[in-house]
Each structure stands twice: as structure tokens, then as C-alpha cells.
Amino acid sequence: MSTTKYIIVSGGVLSGLGKGIAAASIGHLLSSRLKIIPIKCDGYLNVDPGTMNPFEHGEVFVLDDGGEVDMDFGHYERFLGIRCQSKWNLTMGKVFNMVREKERRGDYLGKTVQYIPHVTDIIKDHIYEIAKEESADLVIVEIGGTVGDIENELFLEAMRQMKEDVGRENIVYVHLTYVPIPHGVNEQKSKPTQQSVNLLKQRGIFPDIIIGRCSEFLTKEIRSKISNFCDVSPEAVITGLDVDDIYEIPIVFEKEGLAEIIHKKLNIYSPPDLRKWKELVDNIRNPKSEIIVAICGKYTKLGDSYASIIESLNHCSAHLGCKIHLRWIETTDLEDASVLDGMDGVIVPGGFGSRGTEGKIEIIRRAREKDIPFLGLCFGLQLAVVEYARNVCHLNGANSTEFDPDTSFPVIDILPEQKDIKEKGGTMRLGAYEAILRKGTMVSRLYNSDVISERHRHRYEVNPEYHKILTDNGLVFSGTSRDGRLVEFIELPELKYFVATQAHPELKSRMEEPSCLFYGFVQASLRSR
Ligand code: GLN
Image (cartoon, rainbow, N blue to C red; front, side, top):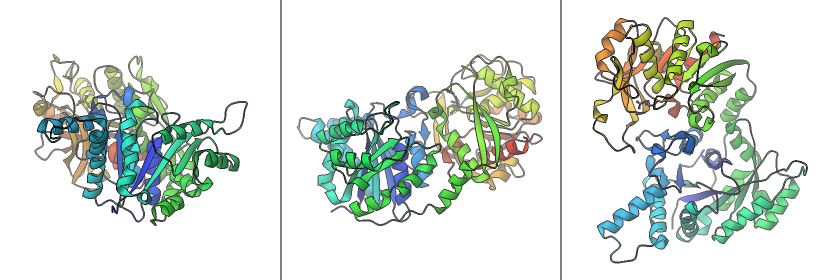
């Protein structure tokens, strides 16, 4: 019999109800005594989201091992305080690759390869293998999409089969639905939940716990109605409250008694300990100061594209008791960098392609000239170097060869190891890389260390041929790769805060431990107010 316990999280009615945050919050609640491993199953046929546009799929989250994974892994890492592995994101693209490899190797020995059992076996074996490798006490499997979608049928079927393999007492099915309060009716409605649970039951999955996303706490009446129609006990109907800040969800779930229900069903005991967490959430709720931060990008209409940056700022709010108002600046048609007036700080995040770059360069120039705290992330570093080359080093027309291959001053150029790569998927410089920090710089003070590691996702770098002219003109390289070839951090020491990195420090920021580059940036923005 298996010793690992499993929680399967599915969703119904609508997409975007926050299954990832619900799964991460359940994990957080139960994490005091258990080793918890999150797994996410995504029904699409891409091998990973790395080749998808952020408009399609939100932020691409990058792990230490270089895996490009679903953005829910950001929530898992931030709520569970763990480092995830790319293997834990199982897409249908990966599943089909595995099936095809097995078939070509002849592993199926003359059999007709079928969705059931062959595809579902691959899914289950993958999950059991991770549970074993990690000696997990509890595996939380989140099934992407909504019940009834064609693309997640095979994952749901595999989840149904799992109860036979692991024993009904070792698996809990949680279903997240939506409880609307229609305008004019002014009453919580259970029908969408009933219908969604029916769809799940048609697939042989009988949920143990139902989380109803709602703008208010579920009433006694609706709990008993859902309990009655959906065959769960009334205390297993949990409110998934709309909150201003996602970090409140574990607190809501605790109040709703979710941990006790899971303890009882799985026969485990791991009491929630939310003391520190609540203090931090309280700081976000009751800020003592405020700042306005501009974020410049081309996906500014979709907060999901910059999820980790937003969360990194939230982590700073929680520690500094400071409300951070965000102003999204779409730089594509930017006419005048004076939009920065009145801002306490500006972030230029990662990005690809030429659209909006000239606007971002103007924004960076303004930040430098007016001494507005600036944090550049990956593309943000590259554009800060272009700006410095053009306007301080007088290399007119300096640019990145990413969008100006014929520039006379290619200050940003493709990494040598990237030159011959033709395939797009998973081929960037990806994952955790070490940087050596230069003593005495602001960056080394912020990290309080000489050697650090951050995650990367890029193909271009500061061209080594221009290192000398940039540094001779005052740009400080505060961190580089061990051999000094790759510029990992830059700063302008005479300004309040002008720091950029080739890495994505936002990917490792945690509620309990904010990224120090963001922390320094928010502190400087507060001071410069
Ligand atoms: N487009 C740039 C590169 O590939 C920056 C990438 C990024 O910001 N993640 O190097």
C-alpha cells in the first residue's frame, strides 16, 4: 500500500477561478509537518509553455533546473517555500512524447496503443515516480482547465483510476467551482456548482470537498444545498472568498476548517501555523506608507504576464508595510517619457522583440537623468545598456542585434552558444546561474554575499567587446559570471537606485524572504518620495 497521500484539485464552471492559488494554499495549510510536492497537469499539446506568448498563457515561470513551466508553479513555490522541478509540470505534449518514445522502442510489445490504459498509465506512473523520488508525504495534483474540456479528459480519467491504485483512504478529491450572486437576485446560487459536480461524477470522480468561489462567505443555506445535491458533508463545502490579496486565501481556508477535513479524510495531522503569515498579510492590509511604481511593458493589459513581479512587490509591501500602487505604461506608442513624472520608481521588465523598445529606452533615460529609482530585469538590463551606450558613451545608434542586426554598435548581442540554435523550445539560457558580485557595490550589499544564484531566460547578453567603453564611462558591472564574460548586474552608484540584472530575481522572491533587489528598489522609492 502506498504511504503517500494525494489531493487532486480540479475546477469547474469557469476558468481563472484560482485553482493554482487554492492548491498552493491547501499546501501551505498542511505544510507544517508534511513534505508536500505539487504537480500540475496541463492539457495542451505544447511540451511546455516556453513557446507560448504571454497573452496566451500568462507568465512563463522558470525553475532552477531550467524548466519553463506553468505560472502556477510560481504560486506553489511562493506558498510552499520550495524549489520545484520541471518534471512536476506534466503537459499532454510531454505525455504524448513519452507514449511515442515507448511505442517506437517497442515497449508495448505488439499491443494496440490506446488512451486507456496506455496514456493514463503514463500519467499515473509519472506521478507515482515523482512521489517516490521525493519521498513525498503528500502530493497535490492540480488538473488545469475546467471539467468538461476535451483536453483534460485523460488527466481526469487517470485521476479517477488512481483511487484504486492508492486506496480511497489515501486520496481526496477537491473541486473548485463558482457560486454567483446575480445582480438583482442578490442570493448565492448553487446551480453552476451542481452541474459542474455532475460533470465530474459522470467521469467517475466523486468530490470529497467543494470550494465555492464567491464574493462573500457561503451561507448556511447554500452549504446545505450544495452538500445535499453534490453528496458532500456540509462542513466540506468551503468558501473560496474573493480577496484583495491572494495571501489571504490560506487564512480563509483555515477559518473554514479545511485542514481538519483533510486531516480526517486522509488520516494525517499537520496543524496549520499561520502566525508569521498573518502578520505579513496584516502589513499588506494596513500600510503605513505608499509609493507609485511604473511598470513598462508590452503586455501591460494582462497582469498575469508579470505575475512574479507583482508578487515580488507584494512581498516588499508585507515587510515594509508600504502600499505599492502600480501604473502600467504601454511603451509601444509612448510619445513622451514625462509619464514618469510623479512616479516614485520604475521597473522595466523582461521582454522580447522590438515593439515598444524605443519607448522603454526613453523611460530609462528619464529615470537616469531625473534620478528616479530604476530596476531593470533581463531585457531591462539590456535596454539600460543600450541607453547608456547611446546617451553617455555617445555610440549613436547603439542597439541590440535582437531587433537591429545591422547596428553599428551591437552593445547587446546573441550569446555565442545561441548562434547555431535553430529550435525555439527550451533552448534559451535557462535556469539558475551563479554570479560573482563585486565587493563594495550596492548589489553586493543588498545580497550581502559575494556569490549568488538567480534564474535566467534569455538569448542575448552585453557584448564583451563593449565592456571597456561602458565601464570607462562610469557604468559599474556589479556582478558577472565567474569568467567575467557575462554581465549579470549593473548599477550607477551615484544615483539613488539604478540597478539592473540579466536575471529574473522576481522568480525566487518569497513572502517570507523578498528578493533583495526588489526590496532595495522599494526602499529607495520610499526614500525618494
Ligand atoms: N529578449 C532578450 C533576450 O532574449 C531578453 C529576454 C528576457 O527579458 N527574458 O536576451
